[in-house]
Length: 365
Image (cartoon, rainbow, N blue to C red; front, side, top):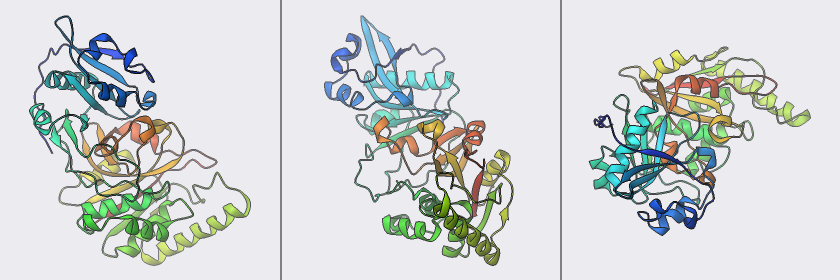
């Protein structure tokens, strides 16, 4: 974790709209004078519109002294510097000032062009490189940096990207156990990911009870509790007929397995206060696997598991094992991701015929 550095109260900057899809020739002259062509080419290579891209520019003599391209997932409490150009320290100071004025708790920085020395001088700490994943899709820069503007941050876990579109539940459980010291980081790979998914899946999704049962079977010494505010089968709204029914049979079997293994299934939601209390518990290594909709953060309403592992003032810090490269995201967007309490609570209400909230609480011991 890193201690926030003070920022001058009057850092001059201007926020300039970003023109999605514009080539380098369409950028303002002030920007093209200080940014290398290859940087501008990367900025315009994807449609960053879903992440509210903007330029934070620092005025100078006769133009801009510095600028940074800034993005962030909707519904979150951070800002990301994609690149800073010109006077890099001045650009970093401006973005931090902007983030503080917006009430954001964190600024992260893709390591495309910034040196470790320049990042450290601006008060940013290096992030751990992500663990090797089971997908060939590029994860972004090998390095990234973080600076907390509220609180002292949280202990940094390992980051691993899921290798399929449906194994998020298994990956969050494995990441929780890595952080608890139950699983070695180097053993988190595609084999372990898909093996746990196979034990937990309701084909192809992992529903809360089945996931909790799979975790308890894999690690009998870990305490597991499931919170699910319905007794009906879940995550089946896209199916009907026999395709729905046989999955419902498996969910009923998972409930019987939970009873036999002593895994409590609470027929209610895990409240925001309880979630925060669980991951803040001193001297304990407790984690919450939370089922959320990606409608706010990504624009499509599909269920997805994230790992809640820490808190800062006003926000819960999560690991998201998936990120959208098509919108310019990298692993830096999904790692140590702060989400305001109210926003996370809203994300955890899944739509469909049955509105549900689901979570799995793991105490690694």
